[in-house]
Image 1 (tube, rainbow, N blue to C red):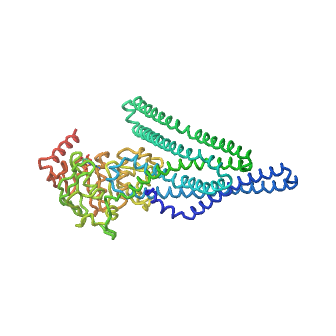
Image 2 (cartoon, rainbow, N blue to C red):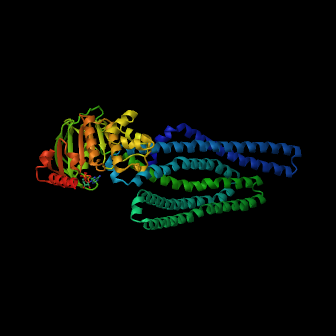
Image 3 (tube, rainbow, N blue to C red):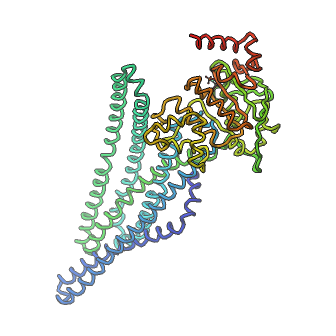
Length: 583
Ligand SMILES: Nc1ncnc2c1ncn2[C@@H]1O[C@H](COP(=O)(O)OP(=O)(O)OP(=O)(O)O)[C@@H](O)[C@H]1O
């Protein structure tokens, strides 16, 4: 139960609704018990009348009065039951939304390393399934638990005071019901978790098939993937059948045990009535009470299993909320950024794979200058860019911007000063305009056009029927690879960054367009420091400085003119790409 204590702050937030909810529970049960008493009193009046101890007129007026009271009690019990659900279940929905909000905020704070270590499915579960289970505790479990408590506290003493021995006999099957329902609910919960797992496997499988449909078709893998789907779906069906088998016991068990209690009341209560120990109305009231108590008794078992499941989920949520982001902003004051970058003996090892991507790297680049980084795949080029934006922190050495270590810069200022275009351009399912404005939400339409022109994608955009309002599908599937890259560049430029980091993002555009983009980059802001990661000499040749990386180390550096004269990777690449151009 300890883990669930963290929910107290949410309960406090909605304390008034909860207090009125609890009052409604008490009132609803009070009137429900009154209904039973009114029925008992009516039976008593009929008995008296049948014994000729009352005139027909008296009988009629007494009965009318009782029926009116009965009707009033039924209506009030109904009203308060409605109010109880409206208050407590509604609060549980509010708390569910608050929890989701807090979890999402934590997701946003966590560093990239966290996302590499955890599977997306698990991350989604935190916010959907785990929160869902906690809500079951916050809403239904608490509501049913309180209902049961109020009923037990009012009904059982009353029953005991009217017929003690009959009370004991009739209540005997109820704890058995409670334990049986608890065991059954636990089994249902276990099996539904498995069903849920299969459901997510099926969803992931189908999602991947849809995303990779072009590969599936190109390799004629339709039959193969269909078989995979059928196997998964058969397993899922079997797990569902396992679940249905135990679920099917739920109601028969309840009806069986209610039946047993009723039989006991009728048999023992009947005998006691015949022997003159109790009144007829007591037997009638007991039958009604037993039926009234059955569901709350069953819920004790059900609620216990809900609380256990909620606790397990809340433990996971608490552990997650406690995680401190690896990358922290330690500077609250503003730290404007000019754009000089220096790496001093920087080494970096990825924690999850233990791959040392950078080994003792040192270089520096003045404000407004362009640095190109060239190297074989996996040589650590993208890692350099990620370290500048503090997506990761260096393992050893130091990165300085304007002569200040980047850890001593305000993280938000640092990231706001960077226009980062990743290798794999990600576009949201929104219009092209909104995707560009993502870099500067307050930008005007004119600015959007200006930067789209700078990224040499304007002409393509206006060719679409809806122009800038064209909606992009999931991952921007309506755009070609090169168009996506250029929209992504426009998005980086519109934020007017001090540092532009281009991670091999011109690979899908032809060399002529590439040249235009590089030219406009230069024109747009002469003060902007630019780092271009590329596999192409054409992207690098005009840079003020070029680094050649190999297995995390700088093997050569200089300008294009210097490097083409030196034996090494750059010259090889240059000659190869020159040959290709001439062919
Ligand atoms: N998030 C990560 N977690 C673990 N290892 C990683 C991660 N990203 C990159 N690596 C590893 O670090 C090394 C350098 O990767 P990096 O992406 O910096 O190379 P790159 O030069 O940009 O390659 P490419 O030209 O193919 O993009 C590679 O061996 C890669 O497998």
